[in-house]
Image 1 (tube, each protein chain N blue to C red):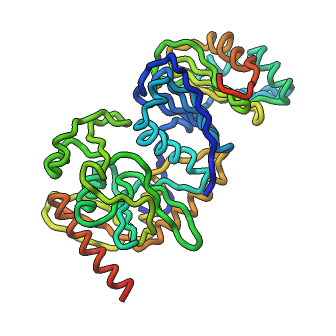
Image 2: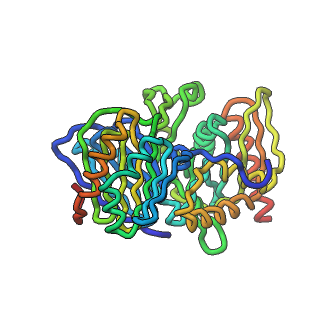
Image 3: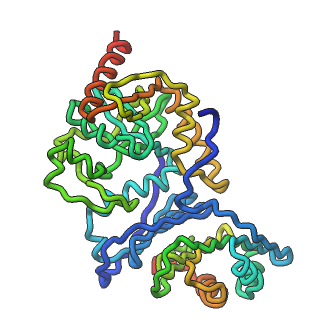
Length: 134
Length: 278
């Protein structure tokens, strides 16, 4: 054993490679994903585009989580005035941090890219931040 | 040490108990769900925890004590000057002994054996290290001691407990060490030595010195890498791990029952205490 380790655990899956990267310079949007369909869908999304223009940019990092649970549930949104978090079951989690202009998320295997772009992201970005949890 | 804020909304109409945990993280945010009704969102940069839980989980005091508090320290500790290290920690006469070792090396069984042999118990698996003045302090949590099924051969007290599925899915005994074994529990201590545990097939024991580089490598490799959004926390963690790795460090190979290893370690500590205080 010498010097720094070459391997760390990644139980949270923070460091999943995201080879599909798109940038739209006019609206300062960047999209990173490990799933081409998701990356393309988010890049084309009007809702994301509008949010990017309104906020002066939006960095999106969305992971297709093939190892996550694919259970069915209602959508719920947790908001504390700073972060807004949308959950669909345990496997799909979207996080919007308006102060840092970031949209982060893990998408369960049973959620289609179309549903993510047309339903889940709009629900999260249109959610009005309130100073309590919903 | 830093503070964090926690806000919890309870849905009294939901009766869902805490299910198997599911953790994910990106950038500065970590989420933990325990079933569909119990969701925790950690914001490491802002040091906040927001949660929605069922009425059943809200009332489950063991869940908060044994699961959520240790998890919160593990996640938010990075921003609060608390560094998790994969070590058990025992204390004797004010001196802390950190016991490192890969999962399955026997840290927990040895912790129980040492607790029965006169040491005070701080932790059996993860210990949280903070820097105080010129030194370091080791902190335990309220997590239960986790013992694998074969531990019942060595500890009669386990016979009245049943096996449970632990957070990582393993079948194990998860018990309160004070209630089950009558151990004296200390919340914190100052570590003096770091011992790396290795089990062998042969009876007997052996202590050999270990370099701080080896210690640092092990400690670093047992913790999750932090993203660049948490670079300040990563730097603080590196400094703390450096301090831990500079402790006198030994490799302890042993074969035999945990009570034998505990006796050998006790002699080791007594001998080194005499050297320190001579």
